[in-house]
Every structure is written in structure tokens, then in C-alpha cells.
Amino acid sequence: MTRPKISVIGAGNVGATVAQILALKEMGDVYLFDVVDGIPEGKALDILEGGPHWKSDSNVLGFTTVNKENYKNLEGSNVIVITAGLARKPGMSRDDLLQKNVEIMTDVGKNIKKYAPDARLVVVTNPADIIAYALQKITGIAPSRIIGLGGSLDSARFRTFIAQELKVSVEDVNAFVIGGHGDDMVPFVRYSSVAGIPISNLMSKEKIDEIIKRTRFGGGEIVNFLKSGSAYYAPGISITAMVESIIKGKNRVIPCAAFLTGSHAKHYGVRDIFIGVPIKIGENCVEEIYDMDFNSEEKILWNKTVESVNASCRKVDEFLAGKL
Image (cartoon, rainbow, N blue to C red):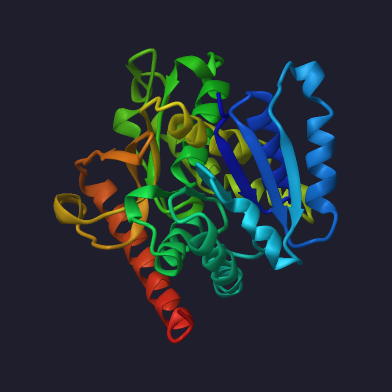
């Protein structure tokens, strides 16, 4: 039986962590790509050599894309995870990364289009919802086969902080956020619970607001500690959850950046952009998008994140004009 093929473009901390977890969970054969000579080969070999202790027979291979011909190894990929790009630095907003990362995505996307046009894409490069939009324009891959990291990570952080505050298992915490990643997220407190008990019954509004604030700036908190890097362990497992649901057809419902069109665009009041909403992730990637109703406070936050994402997508259109 042929194992699924999962390609990870970008062998930095996030990409290498994803590759390691995918191999540990024996999700398939993992192909790791990076522009820095030797890095993907070395990290892939290092991960591979841990296989006996992980009881994993997944093959892990690395390829340096300084040699553009190595992109040919994308052929046959079931899923491609894109983490390549500049890392966020202290004091740098996600939007600050946009133009440079779109330039990087132009090269990556053209090679995906050439060698793996049938793959499903999981976009991680910041800002993920905007980069997902750019990659769809560059690759021409159907929008329903592309999702972006955001709510999967932010929701994990939200659940973690709730569990810490209440001193309960994270397994019993159900909480999620939608909208843009990080600063522009929209928390759904009304649908957040512990073993079915609304969190508003378990803690004060002030404490909930404090947790929301910490979740909103969770990435920045880690950046400030690390000084010269950003989070990669929590992103790594959050990405893996998305990939696993595709590879295994698990049909998990996870908030991720998805393309809104048709009735969903009408419901959410935004059209033809990627933005974080609850989606069912399966073999075809986006199997279904769920419509959420807003109260007045949530609607204000939603409109704010929509405005931000829309503005950035227009910038992407300008960057890509004449380049495709």
C-alpha cells in the first residue's frame, strides 16, 4: 500500500516541527523543502533517524530549493504545507510581513502549479489568510482545496488558558475563535464551555476578557520571550490536526481560513477572500463551511477583521499585478 505523500515547504522551526509530528504519527511519507542549502536534508535525516523509537516507518526526505529542479519532488503530493517565509520579529505586525512573503509565495506557488496542481494546501506563512488568497491567485488551485492556519492555533491557545484558569483538563474545554489570526480574532464566548457548561457560568466577565486578551496576543507573548523567533510547537500540532483530518478523512470541525463565496459570502457579508470560519475538514479539504450568527459585540469585531483582511487582499492584488 502506498503511503500518503505530505510535502512541507519551509524547514524552519515550524516546518521542521510539523514534519517531525507527521512522521511521529506515521501520517505518510514527508518531503521537506527549504531554500537554505543543507537544512532540509539535515533535518529530514535527523527526524528519520528517530523512527525506531517512535515506531514509525514514515520516510522523511529533504530537498534544497536553491536548485529549482528539486521542486519536481513535489509531484504526487496529497497535501502541501507552506511555512516558508520571513519569521515574525518583536514589534513586527503580521501585516509588516505581507509584501515580502507574497514575493516568496510567487516562486513557491508557481512550482506548486507546475508540479502538484492537484494537491490540497495548508497555508501557514503569516498572515495566513492573506497568503492563502495570494497562493490561490498564483496556483489557480480551487479555493475549496486551500485552508489557512489561524483559528486552529488561536482556539488551542484559548482552550489552554481557560483550562489553566479553571484547573481542568484541556480535553473538556470546547472553545473557538474565528476571523483573522491573532490580533483580529473574534472569540465566541457564547459557544465556549467546559464539559458543556458555559464558561460564563464558571468565571467572571473580567477574567474571560483577560483570557481573550492573552489569546489575542498569544503569538506576541511568545515572540517577546524568545526575542529572535516565534512559536512553533503549538503551531506545529495545530497544523498537524488540519493535515490529519485531510489525510484520514476525519471530517473534524476546526476554525480555519477558508474561501467565502455563494450563500456563505452572503451570510458573513464578505466575498471572495479567505477568512477564519468553522469548517469541516476532510479528504477534499473544505467539505463544508458553517454559518455563525453574531451578537452585536461579535459583529463589531467581525466587521473589523473583515475590513483588515479585505484591505490586505487588495494589497496582494497590487503586488501580483503583472507578475502572473
